[in-house]
Amino acid sequence: MNQNSDPRLQEAGIRPEADPLSPGNSSASRRAFRLIALAILALLGGLFVGTGTARAAWQEVAQLLSLGGKPEPASANVLSEHEIEVLDQMAPQSQAELLLERSINHYRGANDQIAERVHGWRGKIQLDQKLESLFMTALNSDDLRVRAAAIEIDIAGRDLEESTATIDRLEPDARSGEQGPRANALWDIGLLGNRGVEPQRAAQILLASIHDSNVNVRYWAVEGLAYLGTDETIAPLLEIFHDDPSAMIRERAACGLAQSGMLSEKQRRSAVPRLLDFADDASLDPETHKWVFQALRDITGETLPHDPAAWRNWYNSNEGRWNPVTRDGR
Image: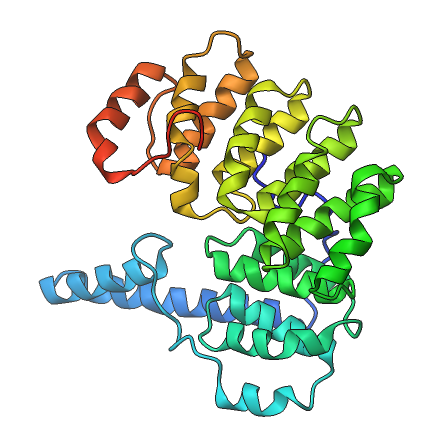
């Protein structure tokens, strides 16, 4: 199941590396420095490995050099005073790039600065390759506040006012417009609803398109529901996952339930009873069954075999921790 949160965005092209042997290449210098440092450490380890104290010290150094273990903070992870001071001297585009990057890395104060400035960025920033790359990374964050920051910046970058008037303008296209404008309108309405602009109305507009004969329209209705992220979207996403004739649409509904979009962990857990029913449902094809088990793993964090009985036993043993919705998804 492809968990890429924003299918609009094509994977960014990778810029070819500069000549690694070039004297001006900082990456080459850093690599050389690391090799020298490792050589020195290896020499010291060889000299003193015979003593217990040295062995313990060497093991500690080796552990710090590894990728395993708990996260090791590199700093206090707070937006620096200098960065805050220079923000007003920066162009809106640079502000958005810096603050979204800091938000992705969980710098305290970054989201506050985005909230304070984002409405002033409307119509003044562009979703160019760099900002779209940051946007895509933020939408895949494990922190919903980072995803929310990305959505705010996306809305500003496309010059959308967060107002009822914008929903009024988008609704005709979302319900019956040409395919391109309709897809854009469905996406925009989902994002605006997530940011508090008439979320119930947004849900009704999106739900009106989930059975459309055009697969592209259904696709964007599903994406809009996933990013709207209200309780009202869970049952329709489950229905789409189970019943839509398109494998692509079923997969996107599964992703919206399991990991992508703006549902909270608690909301996703509420889908588990229905997913357990799906795991037992012989009418589903093998690919959809595989996505059911992947969704269960993504939601619960549990690694169990693709076996309905194993998942049912696990759930029955842990049901008291879950507080699920009823079986029909309400």
